[in-house]
Image 1: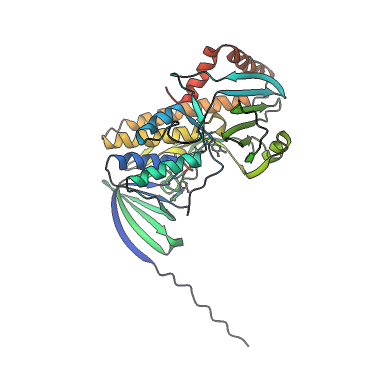
Image 2: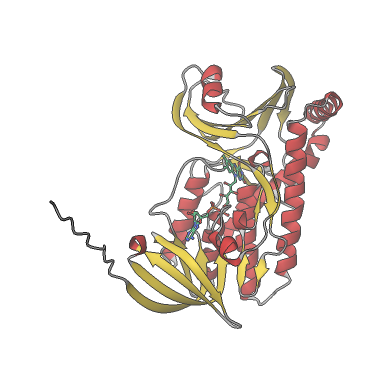
Length: 376
Ligand SMILES: Cc1cc2nc3c(=O)[nH]c(=O)nc-3n(C[C@H](O)[C@H](O)[C@H](O)COP(=O)(O)OP(=O)(O)OC[C@H]3O[C@@H](n4cnc5c(N)ncnc54)[C@H](O)[C@@H]3O)c2cc1C
């Protein structure tokens, strides 16, 4: 007979406490700009990120003029960074017939948005933050929160749970994305609905993309749409509200080399108020929407800078501004997506007429692109 002895795994748990003015949970775009705004004002801020490193692919490809304007104070804008492609032209097909080839009108004498990969923009933000002496704490996960009248105590784990830290913060900022742990721990309702479709996203390299165009939409009478954009020269992102966008890209661009692909689901949801005592939710933690309107990253950055500026001035009316802007942006992106994916003949005809008209008269196109620019 053999005896097997089981020794329990003993994890050596180091435990310690620390304090800060602001603890930012999540080093995506919203968390980075919040931390950067505080650091630039000389306020003590910590920013933690559960991943071990930054993900550079599979996210936004368009950055609005309003966001570039907000980032100028950190010396990040289209003229300083390399490779932003001004959005000058987009082409729109319905059942493979050309509906409109639109020259994107300038808003305030500038293009309403530029194509630029989100991952690269986040790298610039992180570098500026480092220049102010704040380093993103990778591999650190928020696991619990206790709220007191005048502060928040957060449990942070590192090194796969072998180190536990209790961090006391005057304010905690939940910038931890669509599946926010902060929102889950506090049991905050995320009000809205899920779109029923299965979506897929992929990026390819190709030399067959028309150089004068920055985005193309291929809509279909059955409600399925392929949305193509050019985040950097020679790289094309395809988003499809159905599975297998990679196959579609291969059909359109025979020389395509696949960089990545993944499937995802899309919801239209938001918290009714971004503030819960000493805790705030910003970016995707506070609202999620269809990627088709190209607004998620832009709203996340707007939230982060607007909230930090306001808290540094003790201006709590920001709670109302954040909620109201999120409600408007979600209304717009849902309206936009419903029209793009409609199967109703009359709505398709009205939508196509609008875009035909917009391609002839820039003043008609301006209505749409002013919203895209984020300057309102
Ligand atoms: C395919 C696709 C295309 C898109 N295209 C566009 C576009 O063209 N334009 C646009 O404006 N938007 C676009 N978006 C939306 C945009 O990418 C998001 O809205 C944006 O990333 C939100 O930023 P965020 O900082 O709020 O959240 P995230 O980028 O999700 O960052 C949250 C971070 O928090 C970290 N985290 C989570 N939990 C914890 C924890 N417990 N402890 C520590 N860290 C934690 C995560 O690891 C993550 O890094 C697109 C989205 C998709 C999926």
